[in-house]
Image 1 (cartoon, one colour):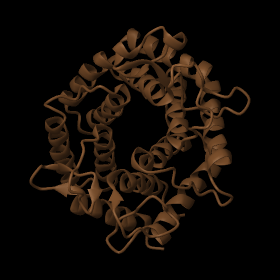
Image 2 (cartoon, one colour):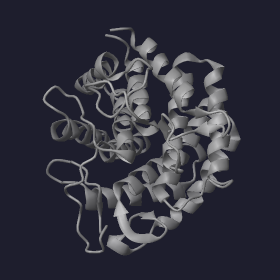
Image 3 (tube, rainbow, N blue to C red):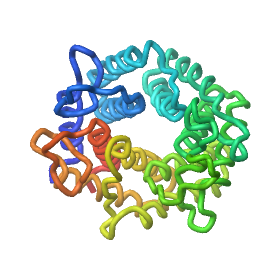
Length: 339
């Protein structure tokens, strides 16, 4: 196999050269471009994250130039704002902007993150015993994708801005998520509850990114409190995901079309962070590498693009979400090296 850094660069090259629209100055949703492209805000948050990954790996300024172009394009296409109907969409963007602040030191990114965060906090209500709503026009549906990323935001803002209210927000959001959407026996994270207004948990919805964001929230809280129980919890969630969702070889299969194409890259982002917290997670490092090798050896087509099934090359229409998931997985593996 080629060195993982070379594969990363090929995937990043394909991201920019196949999905970037020079006229609209923003990423499109598909390659080849479909006649009518809908606006899918949250994919662009992860596009920004992927470009930041490229800069961290290479220190090449063209990644920051691409980041700035996509940042401005996404802001413009979203109506001159980063506020949105979907709370979880805003949360993904906020996390990307906090990273942009950390990497560049530019205060406008953290200021924009705080502005969005103030809107995100309106998601909390008493339905389902608390928790953050998924979207503004369905306030009684509560799910992990709207809660765990919000907890990560709160904890990260607390560590940077030292506002006690952010820590308090993170604590109550994480507690709600663990109390309502985690299997206490296995630590597997369920997606959501009350989607149909019946109070039921969607036990059959099993997604990698739900595991990833709870890993991230538990890790951030462990950093703040020095409470190893939360780091241990993150490890249990990460390993249960492998048991529950990966195949016998440790490869995570395609989870479905549209938004689902992004899920694995989010999981691997937070699993990578977990492996940096303790030497106890060598097994999870290998899982990241296995999936990256599968992408590099089997999943990447002649154009450097990766579709949903990492075990085979995709030659038809490829979603931005699918390719981003592969880019992020490759970037996390690159940080671990070729060993």
